[in-house]
Length: 255
Image 1 (cartoon, one colour):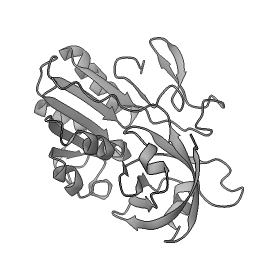
Image 2 (tube, helix red, strand yellow):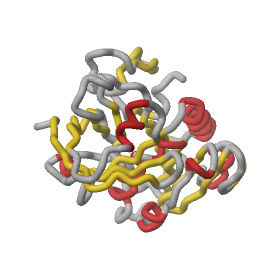
Image 3 (cartoon, helix red, strand yellow):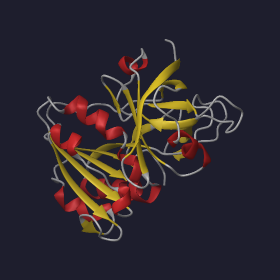
Image 4 (cartoon, helix red, strand yellow):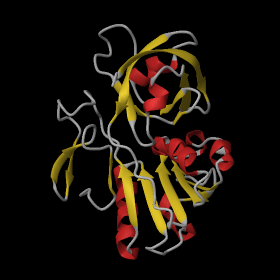
């Protein structure tokens, strides 16, 4: 399967002070991506920045969509890329989410900050399967939150928390855990975001016997398990996020 693609930018829009939505032409990549997988993007045709940047695939229907935060030089350059420019994109990479069994009544997606990115594609895959979809989203402040209309169109009930209370409930996303139906037989959790947040989700799941999966966020320079720069500790030893993950069983990661 071809994993290196030259894709044209359809749009690259700023949606909040910190967040951007990049849309790339369909190509062959979109049809290959499964929810939870990621791509490595060469930011520009030069040696600076040298390494590609990893991004979860936000959506892969009519186009390849990436939802990202401007954090440093690489994403700063990416935010300045204009419609019609070409990007060298490598993917799809990594493991995908395992879709829940049909007996699962409530599917809960818990995202922190840019960790909400893989859940758009997941909700696309789940919207017609008969599950009750719940999205719990935590952001630092209003500038890190955005219009959740597309999630709502997929049937998701959306609840938001912010650290400063500027949107939704004040506090961490754990303040929203009371929205979760506590039934190990009919509830499935998916989470992606900062390590402390995912550790809190894991603790909650362990206390209540809930199953789930987590998508880890690490710096992934090569994207194929060669450089070993994204190793995390698991109950089965050390594993690479880019090759063995980014999706793992929720209870496998040792935080």
